[in-house]
Length: 333
Image (tube, rainbow, N blue to C red):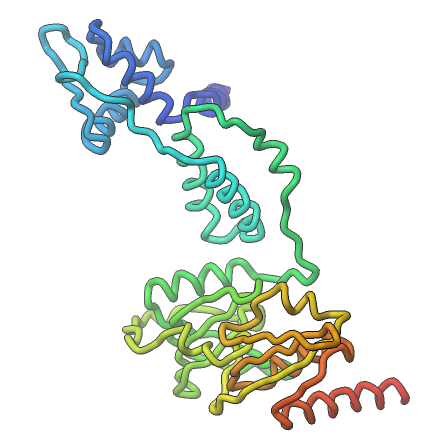
């Protein structure tokens, strides 16, 4: 019961910054309060007061002084306003949007530090915000029609291995394969691309950098070895010619023409860093990109259900036609 009362008290106690602001105002007076008096006034322990005062003196550089003649604390000279975090409504709104977007990663190793960071910023706001956060909380959300199924434990281990430069071993099953291969890899980078996680690592079996999907990883363990990441590795440079994550050897100009039914959807997004758009006379739009892999963009063209036409290269146009023929043949069987 005592433990329950203690937890209840902790939930109701003032945030640290608000408590330090109270101490600041009391020290500006001439009563020289001591730790016991401050603890009684603020309903905390003397240990908390000592910690707050040390923080104010050492980290906030406030001239807190203990005068033995008065057996209490005061400021050594005049002090200015209490240092607080200044944040605008726009910044606070952006933080709320970011927090809502990160809710999909609850349960991962990112949750605790993120929650702590948001709480610290919220606790540092001593003024009343002029708009209702509850209204915003109920009016903003993030949804996805195909939410990735994640093994959070695997993602957590991969993130820590990449950050700590620790070599790992796991079983990995390629798409369409029933049997999983054993891999030993040096994890370079864990990236979230278009809402999905991918591990970029040096694979000792292939002696090359490979991309792995965490959902297909099993039997994950550390080898106990560490590695030194190569300075030349750059995820941005590696993915420069890809439409998402797949890369190739030959860069090509990709030109796709979209009719007026879907043109606005194309205009409203940035599909690739190299893209250029040209409006057509019939209300459509022509999209040009430079890519070194065609597999992902081929699947993307197919999703537009005949409202997209590949102008070049001929190889991409033929792969789209062949995929369409396979679909028709399957439907006619």
